[in-house]
Length: 112
Length: 114
Image (tube, rainbow over all chains, first blue to last red; front, side, top):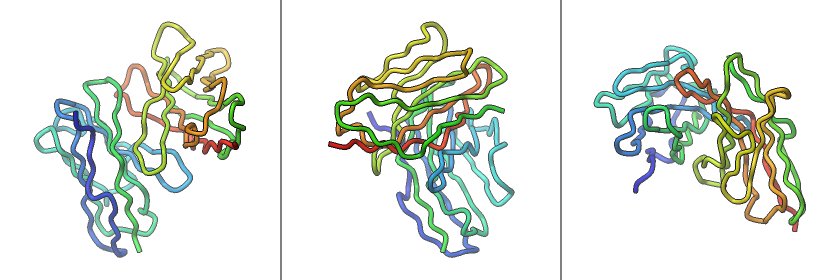
């Protein structure tokens, strides 16, 4: 079956611009996670959804970052007023309740 | 808060030699422990995990890891390295009683020398 997909695979933007990153989880998975992986580092937790609601957003670095999952399936990570320090690979994972997390290939964001 | 320490960002191993990647964790509650592998241009793939029960855990591709509570460790081993094992490996911990969010180490880039 289809795994977790993320679009776009690469995104280049200019400092100050707004970007949206999309995640399509595995069908039927109720839990969805966003992580950010900077160069030379392991992934860092950003936000966790259980169904439509953000159950834990304590990893979001500041109020420029926001994520939604309006119908409990697809999720969008939104970054306002991008900064060069936002450049990283953004990973999405989904799981059934508290089961194994399956990761997507990531979106590489470059802020010039 | 939970955290993971992986020392030595780059690890070189000869083909056929033992692979040993060290992972130490910090957790105030019983942990769930994981090893993930990331091949170039691919997503993270679960190698193995420890939740409860047997402390020696076997995973895919001949890897195994042992949970040692007294040492707060979860080291990954493979008896004989293969060229296809060249990848980045991440150890991760989650809170067994929480929301399953993962805290990752910095990773080990494994290079296999023919």
